[in-house]
Amino acid sequence: MVTALPWNSTVWELFRAVRAAGTGRIAISEMVLIELLAQRGREYSSALDKATAAHQALWKLQFVDMDAAHVWPAVYSPEDSLQKWEDIYRQTMEVLPPDPGGCGRGPAP
Image (cartoon, rainbow, N blue to C red; front, side, top):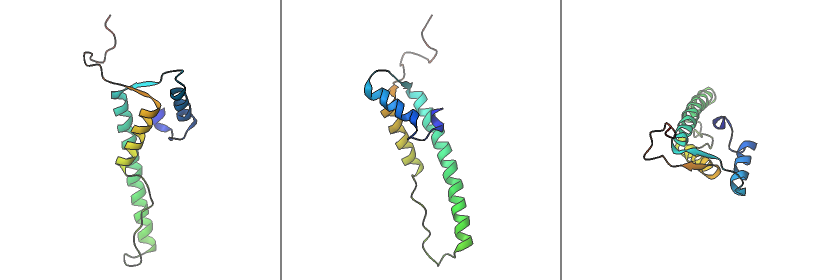
């Protein structure tokens, strides 16, 4: 769910408020964080590739190379986008380190 929401959604505001108030705990494991960032990265790169191709196609319909400088709108690079999202996740959720003795199966019976 959180990967489909923009950073300024009310859900993220709620997460920030809970963390700031200290009245509850919202936590994810480091592995979940890595997967969330990977998913965001794939989606962002795909959207950026499509936008770049569309921008280039529109440019070619309107101009020739010597008409003007080819200006791309100001958007985050994939790396900057991932850094922004990592910061958001870490500021709104507690990121739990991996359990060095565990294998990810939960508590022993």
